Length: 134
Image (cartoon, rainbow, N blue to C red; front, side, top):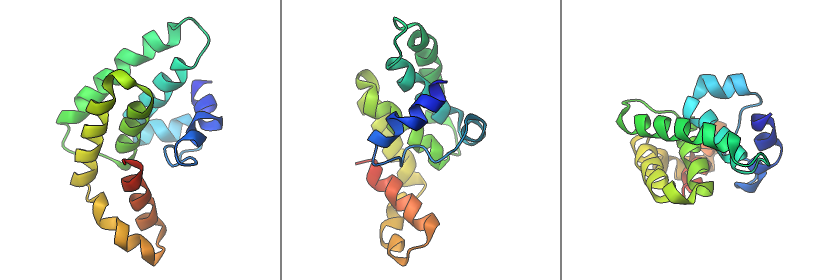
């Protein structure tokens, strides 16, 4: 339910949906548990349940974000998850956005800005994600 709510409403607030490209929870979870934790945490922040959902989701998200810092390999969806968290979670925003930029740089996303002009979907996606960081 939280995933569907994010996909249906909150995702559109971030550059018209660049933050979530997956159609379902299973696909997103297989790509990046961090992305799913960010989505559930942010949507729980907007839930009208006196913070119960948020109190369950937030520690999981923080744990996955902390683990992400020391992982060797990352995905584009890991970067998206950090961006989602940075946008809505003001208490950790700078930490998350800084980590997202470092990972994006490791993934060489900055090199796809010029390549995106060739109109190849993969290059455009990576360039959009790079610009999403700023």
